Structure formats: C-alpha cells, structure tokens
Picture 1 (tube, rainbow, N blue to C red):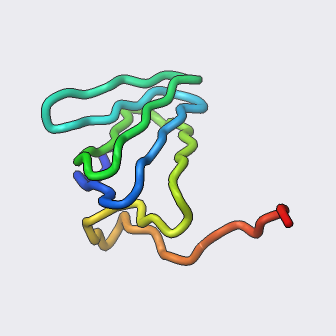
Picture 2 (cartoon, rainbow, N blue to C red):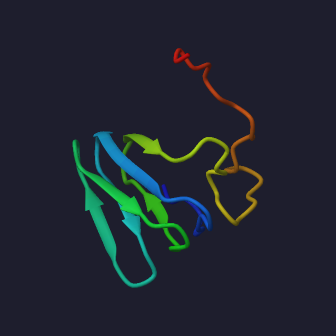
Length: 89
C-alpha cells in the first residue's frame, strides 16, 4: 500500500530495505529500493512510501520524530513516546 504524503521539517529520514521492495515517491520522481539499498530523504522534502508486497524496512530518524511528519492521520500516525530502552550508559 501507500503511505500519506508528508514531510519532516526538522529531521532527515533514512529508509533501509531489509526484505522485499519499496519505492519512495516525491512529487517529481520516485526511487525504487530493493534489499540492502537505502535512501536518505532530506528534511523538508515532501514524500511518501509505497510497496506492492510485504516489505521489511528499517527507518532511521531521531527519537521523537512523528512518522507522518507534518500530517496527522487517524490510522497511520504512530503514538509518540514509544521508545526501546537504551543499553548504552
């Protein structure tokens, strides 16, 4: 399926495809990614992700960044404050 169009004003976002295939769509082009490939979306750039099949993706972004960026979506916006405990001291 497709995610919502959004942007992150204060954070870059990196997508690393672990398994499957996905595309990152921009208003004027799109980028296809396969296993082991990654893409960095610079802060402030409107984008959305899409996949035709089940895909495992690792997303790198600062803690506290809302997954839907500047858009509030009833079904897609993840709860804030969820974070795994750190093992670093």
